[in-house]
Image (cartoon, rainbow, N blue to C red):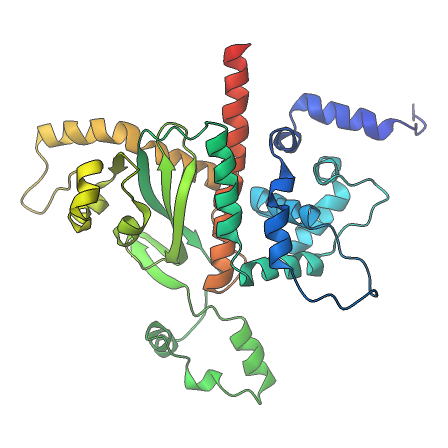
Amino acid sequence: MKKERGFFDEEFKLEKISKLGDQLEKLNKVIDWEQFRSILDEAFEKENKGPGGRPSFDKILMFKILILQRLYNLSDEQIEFQINDRLSFQRFLGLLLCDTVPDATTVWLFRDMLAQKKIAEKLFARFNKTLEEAGLIKNDGVMVDATFVDAPKQRNSHDENQTIKEGKIPEEWKDKSNKKIVHKVSQKDTDARWTKKRDETHYGYKNHVKADVGSKLIKDYTVTDASVHDSTEFSGLINEDDNIVYADAGYVGKEDEFSDKVKEKVEFVICEKGYRNHPLTDLQKLANKIKSSKRCRIEHIFGFMTNSMHGLFLRCIGKVRADFNIGLTNLVYNMCRMETLQRCCRKIFL
């Protein structure tokens, strides 16, 4: 029997979604989104030209749309559709069924403005301050590792790739009178690089992460192209306040590059590496197993990004946009991790 539509159907449906477990509702309960407003206002600060034109969307609303994009790895077109289609998205954003939803172009422009102003690091640092004030970052040691973030693959010739590696633009790409070439160049990523690890080939960038051992919260990060070795960013991530550093065998010997002051205050726990004709002894293997029992926790972070956040890949091109999107990915991970930690604390004390 077909039921008639009621006045409270939307409320009943949202109540059912809550009972099933709405992650977005949980995030809204633990995160004060207003803490980001001053940073977002700074990015869009411009001279007042007087009244006129259509009012812009609220910046916190737009920022939360970007959070949804990174959490579910959605394109601009898909995020517009999903917001219109899903009640849970609308509730997360504070929208009613009658409200106007930003279109795909508006979302792209907002994100690109933040990327050009290089605002991701400020947003990340502001939220980490909140995590420290809440006592969630334990500061009893850190883990360091890196993961690939794949970008759209480029179909360049061998000569074009060689020229790009040298930091130059191929001559045939410089003809601005040819509209086809101009359009082609606008779609080319000259910052991403190819690399191979074991039997896997990757094209794009790397997310170098330093995470707290106790809480598995990301404390700092850097972004490079995929060809840069993991250990290259080691010295830039570690400081004398980190106490203990856990890392895999790829970082062997890099502790020698630090100053004596850092070496005195920081203990480096790095897995040993075997070499041709000099394999690891049983004692070294046992030592590596003990070291990895803590170091391996950083793999849980990348696993969450790959599985729960639906993949580590980008839809943008260029280092500037990659920096922003990877930074936002790290921020969203920390938001989800914060909600998990606080929920676990509540269960312990109840």
